[in-house]
Amino acid sequence: MEMSGICGLYERKIRDINPMIPNITYDITDLYNFIDGLADISVLVYDHEIHAFLPYDWQWIKQKLFQHLKKLAQR
Image (tube, rainbow, N blue to C red; front, side, top):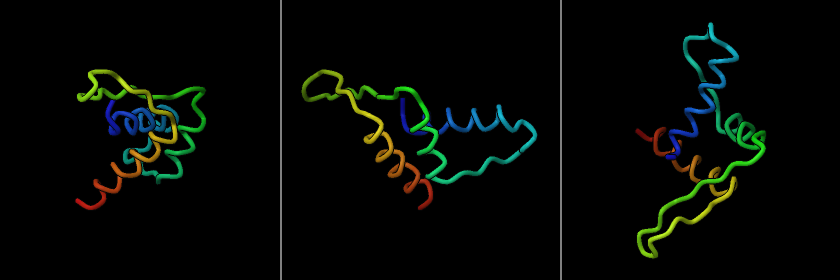
């Protein structure tokens, strides 16, 4: 799952809670709190050099989400 997919999970949760709000806004802290609230989250990323999937935890996900959102904000 790419980082925009994780953002999408959070956005769907917000829409489910607040279906009448047409435009959803949130900051990185809200997204981090969502991730912290999940019982268990990790990702497997394929490494082409070793031809295997490597696991990463919530801290790695938060770091990548920050980088992803920073790139989006610079557009």
